Image 1 (cartoon, rainbow over the protein chains, first blue to last red):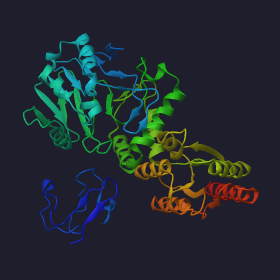
Image 2 (image 1 turned 90 degrees about the vertical axis):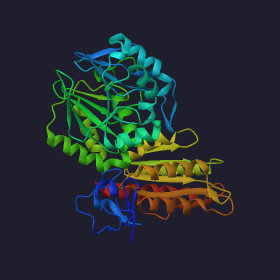
Image 3 (image 1 turned 30 degrees about the vertical axis):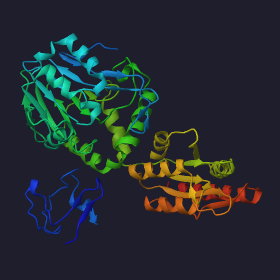
Image 4 (image 1 turned 90 degrees about the horizontal axis):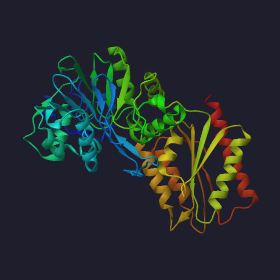
Length: 52
Length: 398
């Protein structure tokens, strides 16, 4: 699945890992992330991400 | 200066002055800096932040003037960067606080810096409050201002905002308040700080300012972790940040260059002539003498960046590579750009600089000027024309 990079801080969202600290299970694609999900490092919104 | 200063009833500055630091992780601090910490005397005596490790004695000295350190009940870590937390292990030993307050990311960062599972962490979500007795402290998460762990502490009843790295300046002074120093110089230090530390996070800071405005916090004083406290018209620095986050530019161009045998420097002068002829202000920044962090302060409010380097061994000069790497990381927006430079036999620099300018999403409006060996009249005429071309583009944007 496609990884996405935060354009603010460089964090990479990897669907294989998800974001368990914030309740996102491994295997969740970027598109499936809730609209109010934010970058776990810097807090930027989903719109700040671009495909890796 | 190793004295505490009561900045408001029972609220004390207890930080440290660093008169000697000249290189702050690559930022030139020609007038030193301060590491500010604040101590509040209340039912729960509370220390906000600490200082850089070598200054732990200065901090303890200042604390002793107010209270015996072991009487401190709470420690608040607004930011984990070592200039504010480096003294933490020793200070924790000295004061043994009941609680150590930090943001969720703060706890993670503290563990990754100091590897102490046994400290009494109390993670405070954004917006939460604690009582010190007569006072309430509200915490506000401010990620990337300037690390993911950063937060503000707001002393509600006193209307004091302890703002961590936001609104700071690297400037060592015995004066503690903005109204005790010349305002122009203070703002210059604050601008340099923003340009070199916070510029890449302008989008997040803009949102943060909007959020704080919505909360309608009453603010009498803004206490940053570096430099002077904003007491007189404290909101002036918030207004300045608002403008800097928007990266509003002036009719101004920065010509930044490095030169081997002055050919590229001569080209820079000719470009400056072209800008001046068209009535656009230009700032010449010669990397042989100007520091990258001073260049960034000028770039922040400039509408155009014109970068020049001689070609050395099929490359640009190392100082220009340094400058562009640094500039790229700080992500200035909405710049018009072009490159120039002289060469002996191959001439790669202009192409390489242009490529980097494009990677920074600058609007490269001219293929640039590349001249062999020592420029003659015709070559310099091309440089003047480049300056005029840039000036026209600058003026076209208002």
